[in-house]
Structures are given as structure tokens and as C-alpha cells.
Length: 184
Image 1 (cartoon, rainbow, N blue to C red):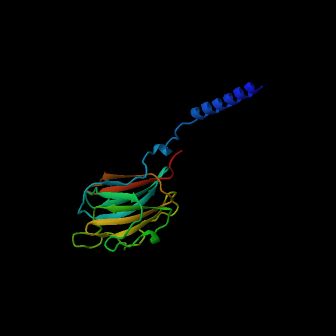
Image 2: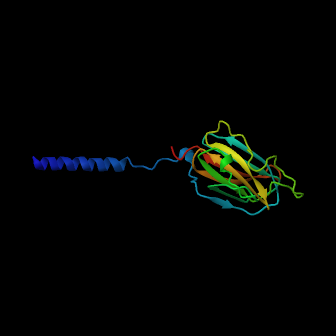
Image 3: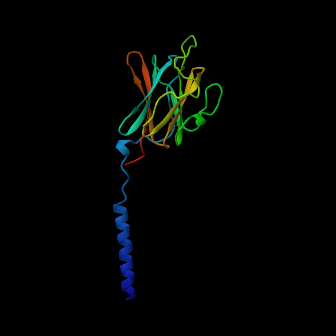
């Protein structure tokens, strides 16, 4: 009787182990997204000014687009507190969301005569994101000595990617996509 119970217990344990290993497959990436959430940095300083900020919604991610009046490819994007350029004031009180993407663009938001090329002041909202699944806010942090800062409020710390597009014409765009979620 004791041997039967021991064998039965062994069969149950082994059956559980086999079922556990056969069902243990990695979760599929959400919409094929494999971006991650670590900091991204690339490119060089540009003198071509930022001229427009806009957002867009897609099936799997929300997007922020920064358009420049010429070739620009320098950026640094990471999760964490964002500070205004020149003054160093925290932008988190002005943003909504559960996480904050700190965006530093290596290009000015002013022209050669130091006239602003964007209609915002530091701490002002730069784009409307009402009804977006992931984006909660895009706040201008100012431009100083060729660097321009934005705080992007998002629902949570989610995967993101950053890339550069050429055009239209001589313009260029730095694009940030933030996934709606981590995995399927």
C-alpha cells in the first residue's frame, strides 16, 4: 500500500513537471514589437531648427514626430525625470502619465537670429494626445545652446523605439513610437 502511494505521488509529480515544461513557451511579442525600454542615443548636433511637433495613433503604438527644417539626427531618449533647458526645473509637475520619457534633441528650437521656431514656452503642452492609448502628454522643456528638451508622459514604462526619417524635401524627422503594451 505504501509503495503504491509513493509510486502514485511520483507519477503525479512527474506528470506536473512534464506538463509544466511543455506549456512553458515564451510569450509572443505584442504586434511583433521587440523594442525594449532602455535608453537610446544617436546622432550629432545640428543647426537646423525644430519646426513642428505632432503625434499619431497606430494599432500597436502611439507616435511622436519632431520635424526639422533640415537634416537632424541627434537625440537621447530615456525613461526618467526631465528638466527644462537652461533653468533645470523638473517637468514632471506639468505632465500626466505613469512614466516619463525624457527627450533631448540635438538641434535648436530657434533660428540663426535666435527667434523661436516653436509657439510654446517651457512647461507648455506641445501636442494633443486626448484619447491615445499610451501617450498622456508632450510638454516642451525649452531650447538652449542647440539642445531642445521634451517630456513625454506615457501610461506606464513601455517599450519604445526611436528612428530618423529623411524628407519631405530637405526636412528630417526624429520619430518616437511607444508600444501600447509589452506582449501578447
